[in-house]
Image (cartoon, rainbow, N blue to C red; front, side):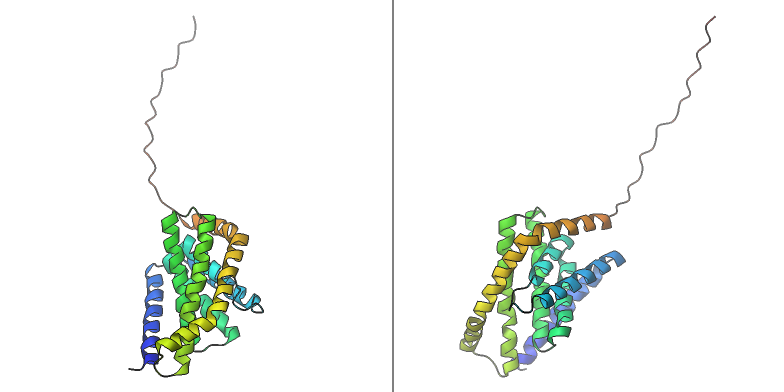
Length: 220
């Protein structure tokens, strides 16, 4: 089995497992609509900032979606956002890498939400956004090696990562700037929407029986 076939098989299994995980959560129609809206927003954010290489709010949107909604919806937002935005930028061997990388960002956001108990520490979350940008770049740079053909060497991998490092740094810096600009407000909006989705049925406490009181006799 060639290196290309192996990597695409692994990517296919990862994406299939992620979407199966999302389906097993049995999302309601409102959650489906929310995930679709956030995926579209992530795609639009990527398209709108296309003139600025690698500076885009997409990673922040995916991370914060997972932070509020959980791992499975966060994965779906990231994977669908990558797929739908490439309808504009063009599909290719890089698409599954981008879908898997942004899906992983959504899962990381859910994990960060659990660690922080969804209190959103401002500066440490900004650092997570930067690290996710670097991680995304490191993964998607491998798509270049996939398209090159043959089994890549360690030197080739290092050369590709070094060539992409300036763009990955721009991505990380842009993530921090976008998060500081709109991240907390975006999370508050999502949390309010999520609160409306959470409905719990509780049994009413039995009421105390009504005991009639005797009427007082009228004064003589």
